Amino acid sequence: MTKIHLNPKDSKIGVLGSGSFATAIVKMLLENSKVVHWCVKDENVKNAIKTKGYNPKYLMAVHFDVRRLKLTTNINSLVSRCDIIILATPSLYLSGFLDQMTCSYMGKIFISAIKGIIPKTNTIVAHYLKETYGIELSFQGVIAGPCHAEEVAMEKLSYLTIATGNDWALKKIPQLFSSDFIKVHTSADVLGNEYSAILKNIYAIGAGISNGLNYGDNFIAIFISNAIREMEVFLKGVYDSPRDVKESAYLGDLLVTAYSLFSRNRSLGNLIGKGYTVKSAIQSMKMIAEGYYATDSIYKTSQSKKLKTPIIKTLYKILYEEKNPEKEFKKLTQIFN
Image (cartoon, rainbow, N blue to C red; front, side):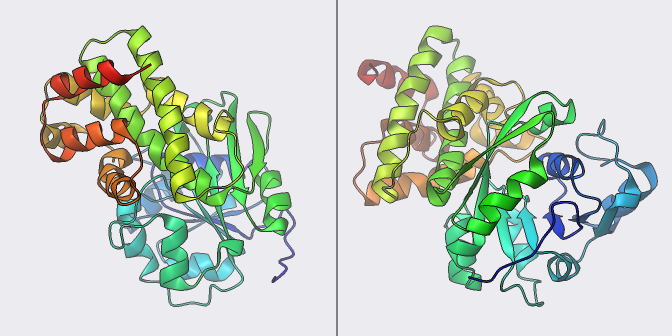
């Protein structure tokens, strides 16, 4: 294994993306790093951050010392200068960025903070990086929650799970994120953490639909109890590995995404439950709800492996077959326990 010599205080860490979670990650990293490299979407965002000291579109309350930011819109500039690259774009846009990558990237550590499926190949990020760019899992990692960007912005105590099979990264990366308001756990379950981060977004849509349909807290608690058991079934079916789904990266992340008003996936579901069409609900959202796009792929994977995942099936019917949410959730109430 290639060894990378990186002091947590140096400047060899970079972030790709300029959304809310990317902005929160930059804030977290600046607690420990003298300089953070940041590749943003376009020149307008880059110039606004430089002149105003904050992201003009997301988490505007977070102000940066721009002298400690190395801003660019060129992914090659980011990757060539950094040993660790945090991928924090919506899954829909990742391939567009990486397709521009012409510099050498072997020996770099790529950590995904993306909670969605890559549409171009219909795969999770870990498989996409390996199959398309030859980046082995030993040079990859995943950032899991529970951690909402909005609470990071307010410096409310938050928790991250860093999952990687790279021994060097497992020791070093937590040092880059740990602070008074960020606690970091580690895990070797890279694929399990990535899949669970995708699944919790899907289930959060269901929790939102429940709320929109005026089901109470009692039902939503039962919904989440069934969802975590279903998540365990799915994870065992696609990647069986020692894990405890009651840990914070699985159950904790599911809980916060299903209940929090900051959750865009819950918000999408809530609109659908209140009577919006799926199309109109998506169009009314200011940010991307990754769970919608992931549901199609996860449902088909579940079907191909003959897994018993009734919640995923129900949400697929509502989101992609335009089935009536009230009728479909009525069916769920008959099988939940």
